[in-house]
Image (cartoon, rainbow, N blue to C red; front, side, top):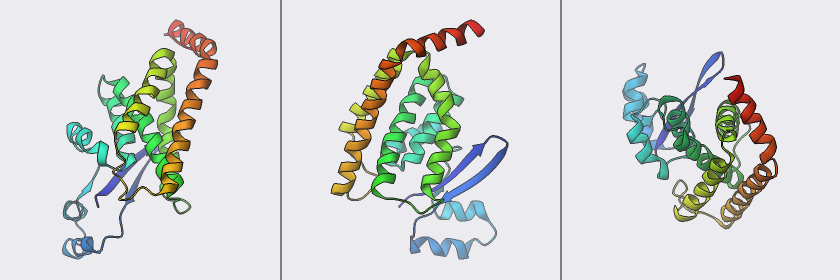
Length: 199
């Protein structure tokens, strides 16, 4: 199982969160590299989605933990001119991660807290960008749902019936989000026009 080291930068503070699997094969790395975190992480194959080469991260994403999809979306949006691709992976991460959390409920303060923190930190910038072009926003959600339907869930070894139900529920919630966007189109477009006028 791949190990993840996730650096989550919240406003005004830096926090490092590590998600480590219960893999006894990694324990020798701890003993072999006491006090040398870089060597230990390399030994344990811990990757940092915020600093690894972007091209490598893009290759990993379809089979990786959804946190990497979220990190890819953030990096594409903030570090490149590919904001649309960033928006896609932001929504893909939400769909896959919410499904995973629903069918594999985490311990309090664990993975669910990480998802919440990342969503609250990154969500506003993505929503503002998406709100500037409602048709593109709707098309992006369509593209995410189409990608999800043709891309098997590979993060878990066995998708149980409960996970299938969770996925169906999360897909339905994305369709409901689309309906809300359509319903509020005039309001969203007016807000976008005000933002453009203020630039």
